[in-house]
Image (cartoon, rainbow, N blue to C red; front, side):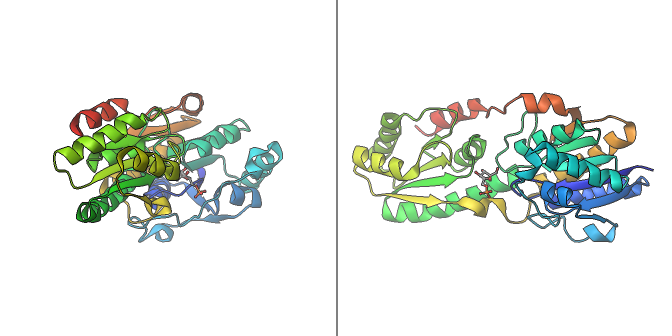
Length: 318
Ligand code: F6P
């Protein structure tokens, strides 16, 4: 009989609960013992493990956050911390670990796999910064940001203002890109591309000339400091420019259907990997289509946003 531990790590993302549910239910269905690890890698080091039942994941598929809680563990970055985590798994007779999290968490997954624990990663991050896959939580965060953009558009039009809307994404601009395109933003600033302030100002001025009542700039948090951007835009265009920082609002809330489906399929696929003896993999995919790729490949790459979408945004916002 296989024993599996499951944990969530790093920034929470809507759909993590659906993924936990899928791992627990698919594991138990296949005769495995499944343990939940509380508080991510911190909890693994502290030995905070509890055996899960079918009922312990009831009524969570629709809930944001993570019932297992999460952490950004400094201790797990040390060899001593990882050895302690491995010792706790060994003591409980657990040979398989499913880690649900973003880029940093999957790097941690590879590290512990090197100590002899079969580790399966499930990508979950509102930033969508994991390479070769869509991440659980991204779709929900895009929709949350979009809802905010729609609301801001109302007030921006009423007052004839420029709005700078900062979304999350410290090093990956995909959330800004998708929310900006879906929200019809005039300009989208992402960390991967140097901003062209003259071009941004020109777009605002062209909009004004054809009677546009507002302008929306969607800015990833890692792209440019929004206060400085506000000053630049005001100086270049003379327009009343306001800032809205969406922040952690984007991390919470009920997951979309897309995220729940992805989480369900990825969770089941993670258990399938364990049953099939495919070790140290990450489940990748979009929506219901999943496949397993070696964890070692994942941590080598960096996710590049779909820049063709930026080009579409540029053309459509002229
Ligand atoms: O990694 C996801 C993310 O939401 C980033 O976009 C953001 O920079 C960061 O987490 C914020 O993390 P914390 O909640 O730890 O401040």
